[in-house]
View 1 (cartoon, rainbow, N blue to C red):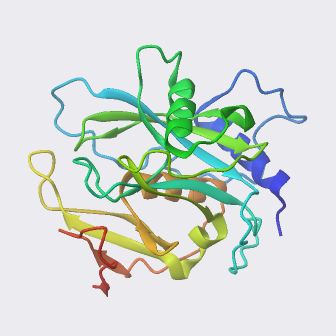
View 2 (cartoon, rainbow, N blue to C red):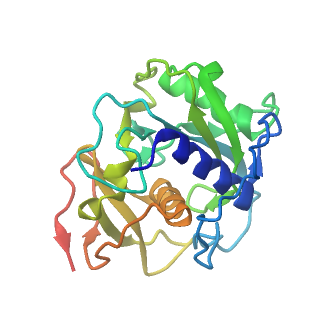
Length: 263
């Protein structure tokens, strides 16, 4: 089984190949991209339609924070993933106008005083979860992606939790939950689903389908699930799973149980 050091090396390799490594990181002996890092032909392009255009999207950033911190290691054995590797997530408050109740990475809109997207991600994560930014080793940024429904351009900032600190809901008006999910639970094929919902006009028509994860008593879907899915695939951490497992979340209220699997 891989240890935390191997996971960290893989994440650094991911950023080096597809994004922009943090210039403060010292170079790794032998280079940043291990030979085992796969290439699925898609790269970081995870198929988010930029939409019809119009207003300039607002810049934002999220912190994709990994670490060997969880007191409850995963019960699922994944050869490519350490059992104690986890990922920090939040669940948005149910009364919010945008994405109510949705599981998300810590993050938000870039403020004028933020030096760059890294500063945005760390500031927002501290404001939302109480984490100490000094304990986070920033590995770098991945290419931004559009959130067409809310007109944001989101830059994922990848971090490693070098010196862990307590996390909690800082503002109940913004979040209902802060939690760490074992990465092996995200890899577990039994927790993988396809989410399906009616698209939001006028941005899209028809139905929107994307990856989903049934973990920690909730459903991770949307942009957050897409980012997690691409990271797992590009690192070779993902396992084969049944894409016939579909959950229709049209009109779903996140305060209710997750809808049952359908066809």
